[in-house]
Image 1 (cartoon, rainbow, N blue to C red):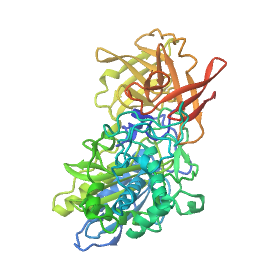
Image 2 (cartoon, rainbow, N blue to C red):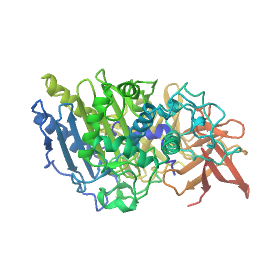
Image 3 (cartoon, rainbow, N blue to C red):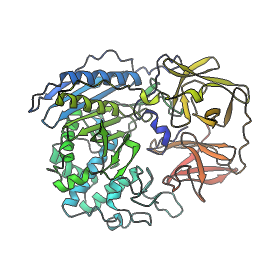
Image 4 (cartoon, rainbow, N blue to C red):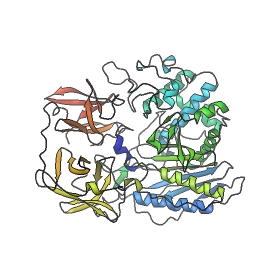
Length: 578
């Protein structure tokens, strides 16, 4: 059972950040759900909505982009994708690309955290009006909020430098009932949906409107985007593409081609991610971002505030190598040229955009499925490269490898046979098409999931990840759950420390944004599967690397000698036995 809440899972969330591992020939891959059939050759083509003032011929670039996007859908076994490409001269083309299901161009897709850029624009528009001071402490505007003692500015919320946790409720279950900062505000980057939720409350306090109404009036109406969905509501469900998610969400990972099913429809009004739109609407928004990225704020912002919107504040690798975060958008270089960039993940939608203000080109893509940390960011980055090439008269670039991030750079230290205490064994082997894990009559894929960790879809070993015990540069053993497998021979499994036994177990919150956690006692170390070791900081626990405790865990409610409640960043998870 895995923590599924946005961001907290840490290294495990990188499993599909830029692509998946090589999966060809994996005989044990779960079958696709009946509603998702294997995609065939791409029959669809981009529809040109507007030729643009320049009259450039993007046809070869669009064909290359369509072929790559189809390849990505095939590699992941995903249902469909909607795409929009546009340039600063007005060229616009859209594509509804069918994978294992049918999507069409008029459907709405949930854009997830790309919604944050709309919130940032609304806040900065209110700054232009003199109603908000972006450098003022948030407490000036929300004096009744359960804020930390440390002063947090509006600007720090916009740039994710507040130190607030990612998904804590406004009034969390903590000893004092208040939020906290894991570091000195302004000193580090830590993605916080809680921070953007508070920005929504700030907008409401200043305007006297719901944040949805204010964003519509201040941003969407001025850009001609009044028909975008401001919330994910049951009444608007029919406009959206059908979403999918993994059939078994308790496994350590859902690898490409894993069985999927229809996802539940969850209403959402969170400022951090509740907008939906069509490809055509997102093309309009991308052109606005191209202008804003050049410092042209009209019709939403002044030019000065537009420059602040796109001005990098702090470095973060969360959005790719060399990325920095500004206000509601990241600034990520593609081949050395900075692009505005963001991704979005909802329960059953995964989105990305890249916009290059200097080159004047942009792309949005969204898939109606969620699978681990997958986002179509390789697709949108490739689109920018293709369109740049057309505008500069250069040859089109080669397509990226959609599965690159799940290929082992050097599997050597992990190869070998590993034996458990009951003589149960598995073998990790290198193959021409990737790395496999075999044993007990089956062979399956094995892919990296962060440093020193791998996951598999082997039917016996899919529940937990394998955490390597490294000695002399090689994996001397692997932890799998509470079992230790030694290289070539059994290795004694340390007895769990007496003080940790009451804390170990499975915990669950039925809100899918909170999800569950598996806590393991490995000798004298307490581990959250997919997160790694957690350390007792005195009254609360946090991940080993999270020294300041941006995300904090508390074990509570002892009954029959076991903790019955795990509070993860102010959210309750209850012990469950299944």
